[in-house]
Image (cartoon, rainbow, N blue to C red; front, side, top):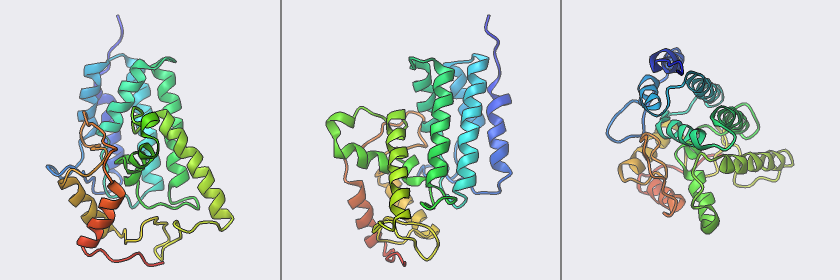
Length: 249
C-alpha cells in the first residue's frame, strides 16, 4: 500500500514562506481580496493524488517557483497560483516521462524563466502579471491560432518559447536594439505606452478582472483560458478611459 501524507504537512510550508515576506497576498479574483492558501490547494491536490513521493516533488517544485518569484519580482502585486498548480498537477499525471520527472523539468523551466525576466537581469520587468494571467500566452496563440490554440498557458511548449524570446530580448538589449522595451525612470522596462506604477497596474487589472477580460483566471482552479479577444487593445483603451498617464522614460 502506498504511503500517504496529509497536505497540511507539505503545502502549508509555502504559506509560511509567504507569511515571512510581509507582502499583501492580493488576488485578482473580483469576489475576494486574498489568494487561496497553499494549504487549501493541497487539499485539492490530494483529492487527485495522495502518493507521498509525488506530493513531496510537487510541493518542492511549487516552493521553488514561489521563492523565485519573490526574489525576482519583489514589487509584484497579484499572487494567484490556483490554476498554475492545477495545470502542473494535470500535466504531471498524464506525462509520458512520468509525473516526478515532468515536475522536475517543469520547475527548472519556471525558475529559469522567472530569473530571466525579473529585476536581477537586464530585462527588468516589474510584475509577473503578463505571464501568470495569460496576456503573453494569448498574444502568442493569436499569431498562429490553428497551431497553438490547443497549447495551454503553462505548457512546457509555451515556456520554451518564452525562454527563447527572453534570450533574444537580452541580446537585443545588450546590442542597444530595443525600441519598445526602454527602461523607464523607475528602473523597470515597460513595453506599454501607459504607466504601470503600482497604483495604475492595480486599477487597470482589477477593472479588467471585473469585466472578465483576463485571459487566464489564475484564481480559479478550473479556469478556461481565453485567447481570442483583443486583450492588448482592450488594455490600451481601458488605460485611456481610466486616465492612466503615459509612461515616463
